[in-house]
Length: 347
Image (cartoon, rainbow, N blue to C red):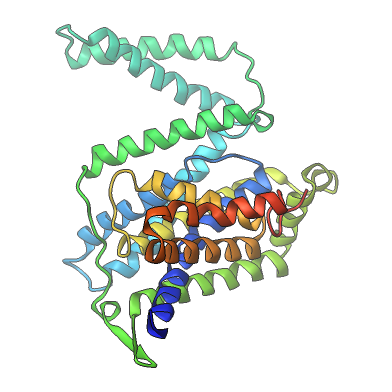
């Protein structure tokens, strides 16, 4: 093991940490601001990659910038999905009529499918049955007093993990179960030589993208009124509401930002990891490890946590492949033992 080995492994670990920062920073902010245990965060990563694949496939015959266009399109599309999920299902107040309507429609379709199973139902009969079942479910849901989800961690976990499975199955139905790769522009497929070491240019791009996004997030959080509102909400949401900060809008902004960053990571990581069913549940524990090490709501903590997890994962697989999972989560266990709130977490 010469110097080149250590340099290459460190570079690979840092580039992997850059990818983990994109998914972990959004999850950290959602944790810190909303106190929501979002187990569907990995699905945003997966859907970002799949949407980018569709955009690239559609635009490639018309433009050579299909990959570049897919980055904002996929990220904004998943951010819109995140906003819809947060507004309809993770908020206790507001949009109750629409939320009940969506739930009733889903239940109505399920009931109609159950009734139609083994029968000769045609589409007209199926639609009529689903409509009647939807109206009945809507009438029942309107009379049920729903316990606020904000204060019930168990319901948060059950709801978001349910969405994770729904997103995963929807991706499987839409894009199939084959492994896919996002091919970056030819310029990023080359390598640069630094001190006699060949470094893939795409990994350099990943590191640069994480640095740029990290600086942009820091400027927004530290130098703008929205950032001040976010910091106040993280510190004390009740006090923030008392001084006139609309914490609902802050929560919506943070949830959309978290989904945006995760989807962006999915597009960038698609050329690095590939896109395939199950990738969401592979990335989710790593994102939680980043949050636990860095602390909830801290961008600096997310950066350090992502770097620690990336280096631990890469060096663990290179030096101790038999116990690589231990070396991956060992930093998290150590931090929890010393400082349960994470390196930069608040009580």
